[in-house]
Length: 555
Picture 1 (tube, rainbow, N blue to C red):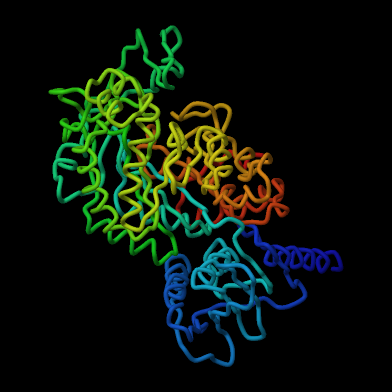
Picture 2: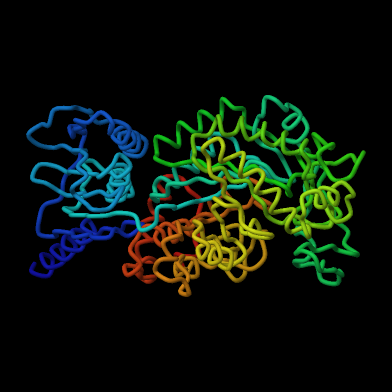
């Protein structure tokens, strides 16, 4: 009999410990669990108290989550009941940091106090991760005290919709994934060689022609897994020109675009999750979709361009925009519509991988260089970027560009997004420019997650442990220079990502690691502990119907 009682008590104790376990990602700055105190029981009678109407958005978000996954819809009120409530409020004095929050169990419920509206919203995301990962009634929430704030102001994630188009409903899901991880910027890669995805009313051919391609490359781009092929590396840029490659495409028409009304809908959706959307309009390279629609803006007179069907930067297929007054006026008109749509202070204009060969062999380009006293094509690129920056600045906005915008001299107010390692970010910070760190080897989630990956992925793998251990502030920067490291970003390019399930698979759990290096204090990072917390996060993903790699559960 004693053995039975002992077994019962052991099981009860074990269940209690499991109920009290808290596994939040990203890791809060301060977290204390009171295991001796009773958990808060949330049920259908629980009320959400919102005295300040500016917090209704956070209350609705929490209510929607409870309704979707626990079939609970709570009453939202401005009057605090005697018990069984979740109180949301603002108080800038509770924390010295911006966008901070305090989540604490109180005698009769829970309290989330934020230093800002977004701070309260971040507190809601932590509360969601205190909920069970399976339907329960009532819902037991551990007695906790959390004091939390973000480490970096820029916590970004990117999605390429040019190589493969994703519908609005999935873009909203993607934004929800970012919100759950307390990310605050969504970099929307809307244009490239392979498709123009945003409606521009002044230039309808951008979507009538530029949004559609007649096929996509079959298999990997030459250079990976294609033994026996010969390649020549250009001495003037990073482009690779296959000599003997036979490139096959599937002949399947692919495309799509977002209307301006759809974009407004997505912007509103993101704003309610305190996520700023930064649109990217690529220039002067990665513009084949634009040139297919308006060939007069290219460097080759009378050429008929096509929307690219192959990935990579091959001189045979990729042209650049001519740095002419006609081109600049066209781009100014495009960016005017884009800036009128997007409230973001920042506009990404690309600036990467511009093959100088086209300007070198263009008589018009050479004359433009001569007229403007430009010594080489790198200075022509800088001239192009500076010209566009001046226009964007005149509209009260700031440009972001990939690190190649440093070539020929950095535009006066530009933000540098460093993808070719850290060098570009370091150089920008030393010039007192904001930098966003997104080195390809760590932050490109289209790369495989494992040494041996079963599915098509880009180049070398970006391992979860390497993502987690990445430090966005380079060691060589002084404390003053380090202030210009605005934050970091993960990038998800879609050459080999054709459907939402694979987006999810490539994103998770590396987004979890990214969120922790950008949100949590550096000294709190602990990879074994992170892996342990992931086990609970995976159960939540199961609840939410998210695809992720099961291989992490095997270790």
